[in-house]
Image (tube, rainbow over all chains, first blue to last red; front, side):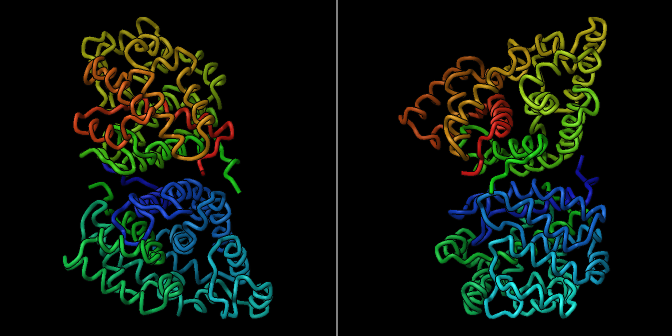
Length: 273
Length: 273
């Protein structure tokens, strides 16, 4: 028996759960590593609490911006801070549209109300964007600006795409999500495949969460280090230890891997090796 | 913010997730230890897949025996074998009745149809009871016997109570579940409290899953070893390593701890330290 008859909500929850359990995932919370404030069980609890918002997306109940806000509201009740905000930005449209093509149709239909709801969701998280950004979430004028310019949520993502690889997925038609799903299917079933996909994306794409925190040079250094792990010149455990000691956590690539697992599960990839 | 507004289904899912993530839990699958065939992600996936059956219990849709069968059917689709059968025997009536008093009322109302559904669920699992038992699940005459004697599911549990501490919970009014919930609340918030509760029950109650597999002497030896850990004469990690090497896994106490976490969460105990 395999679990092929999962609905989109269950696939999304399974994707969130599998991603955080996979190890060793250099720098991120995983089965064998917590951050002081954010622990494995915060991510797992968030997986459970996200169900209601994911079901809204699956059944098309409401608009995407509002549903992202619900997901943040429902998963923000623990002390672990932001756990899956980036993942929801990807999963909600994907679940809403069922797959990448459907998600592209859905995000093209977002309007200013989605953008406003999204910024309200953003304000609920502990994620802080570059203060130099004119759409700064901390600035009360941001909502006025969005309304005045009649920006859609896709416009907001377009605005953020240069500096945020999660937002960029909306603009590029989920390019890296697609690539991660292909990597999973090529790497075979089970959790080793998730680790390999994570490392491959880490070796080929500068993680924008690392860039925001430590600058481009550190992100590029991490890419080279991930390449060393893939080529067997270094162990994943060793890179993990270095990332942890330097507080380097590739959180955006983790978000994309979650979206990739969701897509791969829908295409018959098996998590159960 | 805390997550106090969880419904019964979410509390049950959270209980399953917190129990398996807690570590070090001597002998069982935990955050840092898999069995070759049964891994952390099997338990976590089962937590997600159990939702539909838990919601049936929460909303009183259908009878308890049938709902236990649904829980087993929906969580049996992975390759990890039986993950939460014992937990469902406790959680389904607890969620159905909301708390221990409600569960006692609910199990008193079970009839022969519940017993029949339960045995069908049992047959779907890889759990095997003592072949000498006249209610052997492998014996096709068992269902005839249950029907002929008009046994309720509570009768079946009464029959099994001597050799199975999970079944015994039905008969004793969830005595150990209650004790575990009290221990959790006394030990304070968070996962250390779960480990302490697990060890305390392990030190004071012979685990019937160990007895079935290795005999009473091994179960008693494990109790003394757990006492040594509680008294600081031995590390939990050391006992864990010994249990793993000897294939001693206190699976029934783990099931009871899940039920205890469910009850404690409903009484305001915080998982989030």
